[in-house]
Image (cartoon, rainbow, N blue to C red; front, side):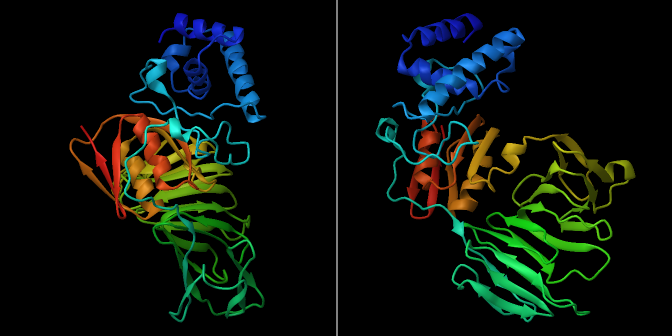
Length: 394
């Protein structure tokens, strides 16, 4: 679609004569201003601003109660498609107009979507984790009643009413007890360490930590993915140790994704400052350690590879923590790795694996069929067999 066609649709929208498909197209286009740079490059800044404001007005009208279907856009190869074939993304509450708003509840119009053929459906993940104490005993946190769970070396461990674990140093102790919290596929959990640092664990992840920080540095070890809001303490730097890297901070907000089935470990900084150290045998010291500023992301692909720094999509990096998936120009395998972890399913590909890339936002509270319906809009055929998702490629 070129500029002339886009402005013609916008004119019809303003006059109230646009078709439903054209309105949905404009609402989706609002989210693609940064994606479709080639289309917008020729527009004046004032024109872009006016267009965004006009489309936002339409979105706000729908949010305030006007009958229409919330839509999001999922795009193949970023080519403009005919409005009738775009159909954008679903209206199932899995997709939000504006993620600053509270989560949208389920709405109608699901019946208008192409169904992903299913034999059954699979519920999303939930708050569940296992706590391994210093003596080796294991506690299922989701089954444990609220209140004091354990007392170790002067530190109280409590489960709160909102379902996360808090470590509170009750009395000083020279001894140090090590605990581990592990989430399964289909689980997530939040905890507060004894220094006040808040940690969110994604599915299939773990964190190992002392019940009380008594050493010069506050050190924890993680696998999988975790988001940290580190309590500031200049005298005791905080270190997050994972495969191939160590992240050093004083007090900051950042996300670490170090799943073994992902092609790289990524550390994304939201606030403050962090230093990422590669723990392998990188010969050039300048590339084995990098300091990040907010908005940057480090990429470590192996123990002997240099650290690469790039601009980050902060919303995408912490989407899981905020209750949704966000896909920003990612392939089907990247999407399905996240789906497999959160829904605790196996994924099988049959036929050629698509090399298309996708953009979209989906609430993690939806059953897996909601995700599959969105993929169906982009001609990705799937089916569910027990706890296995079959991706049928052409």
